[in-house]
Image (cartoon, rainbow, N blue to C red; front, side, top):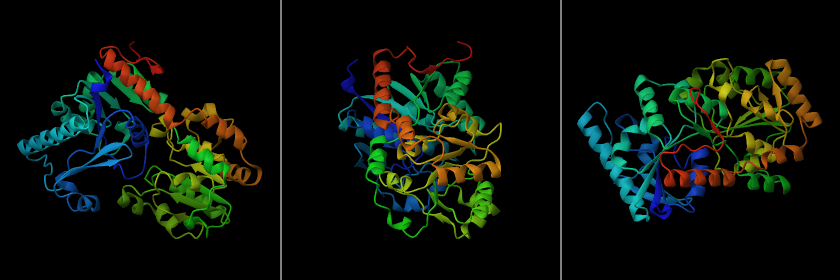
Length: 405
């Protein structure tokens, strides 16, 4: 088949204009060479009245952003799963909208790029020639996982021409579940932007100027998996260190129910700066004295498989890094300091602030150098070309074989 006939219809749960994660980073680059349509699917009845719903288009439209056609579905035509016939009609109508937009963009053959099992019902109506399942997380550990979503994921694993995962650990779990190879497409960073910010000593963002040094930075979602109890202890015992937390709050009700999170809101050395545009992040990370990854960790938690999105951004900034023990990151122990427990964290932070931490700035940036989103998007395109040429052959480079293989 001719590659020029193909385009991508990507279905993912995160807002294109929101916090940038691997979906936007990859698809914005692929979109420079392939027609790409991106959608969160149709609105559902329980989203009615939300801030995002109120901002949305009444009649629905597509907006060209970052070389991608971003769907803004009608806020009037909403899914209502309780009423099966109506719900199925809305799914079909939404899928047809996406198909038409891709056709107008010049692609008459479709690759469905599905990033969560919740979108399985759309596949029937997308009539896609190829299917990619990009499992950006181990979803069964997320709140709200159900037997229905488990069955949908199994179906995606069975049908997909290509399955992608962002870490060896997640790939291994999916390979065992689906009995098939899973291609590891590691998270990365806009390495040139971070290197440029570090070289130029990027101008300090306005909302940082009043925050004293030393600064301890965390960039990422503020969700219940962040270890707020540990963070509170560290902030209390190093009152002269200023914690700068940059990112959106998720599951707000759960956060405010956490007494440690509430305590942090009242501390003078903890600063919550909310979300920033993806192109603003380099200026924040290079203006920290140390950057951290601080999540809850148990033997059964998702962190044992995690390969955080912020990792290579932190490395490319050149600043010292302290993190809780993440098994997927142990090969980087020469440039990352792992800490366990309050006392070890305090010692690691002190070493980072006063002695430069583990590794040198040059070593950290060197570790990030081969992990750019440009390189990852080229890797993804090579996989897409392979499934166009040979749809029945599983993509093998850097794959994790299933336990039954």
